[in-house]
Length: 382
Image 1: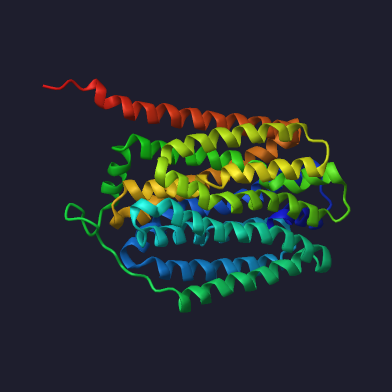
Image 2: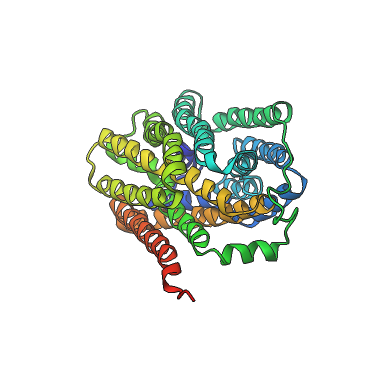
């Protein structure tokens, strides 16, 4: 609800130049993920030990408080510090993925996690449009206060509505708990799993490089009239494509293979991003954002389902925590990089860089997949 007008909110806090707003939009957007990057593995490990439901309640409560306080800021620095504090509790959706993945049989993990993704994307679809409309009606600061109420409701829903069934291990060869050293060793011994995490970094850098400046780009294409609303539409278009295909991609990946589908989706996303550099009106951008959502929508459930397949249940929270931490690192780099590129070279260059990064990620994943399939053939039989 607040992402479409975050940069517009910064403009309202003072008389700043365009370059200043673009650069600080990147920093304010990305700083949340600095603390999230540090905290995600810790929350994952605690969730493995004490249960993920408690972490979800704590996360939603902390998010609600930080978003509420953002409605009262009077300077960019105050907003910056609150976004930093918010990052400690960011990770509600990744933790819910960890909770649901441990409750789900491996052979249908993609489909089930795709259904979960459909839920979060429905929020991504409705949120920007609703937030843009409310912001145009009652102002940016008040909208933050309304958003905090919806996040607080999430904590209550989890507390009263979810029963977590604890599963400590799924086989006799698994342990009931793992040290962090053992978890890291498991990741390093599985090259494809390690590459999935590296690609997660590149995908987040690419996807989030445009997020903080999208409303400014919409303003350049469409003008200032109802800017928050049209920014919300541009954000939500990707959510609609995501909503339509996330569960389907998960279902297809359950049948064909998670890594094969991940490679296809990475190339698709890279190809779709490129034409956005040449759009001349808002509706061309909206159409491309929809196609981007179709491809990006499958990446999260597919890679989470792959981790579900490769990691023992007692370490899945921590493994997903490391993956989330790496994603948050991408969320730090992406907005800052996108803001600086836009400030120095213009919006079009951000799309060129993003497209290249996604295609490069697809190529890396493809090479790693083929090496895994080829390696047994290189071992002589006696």
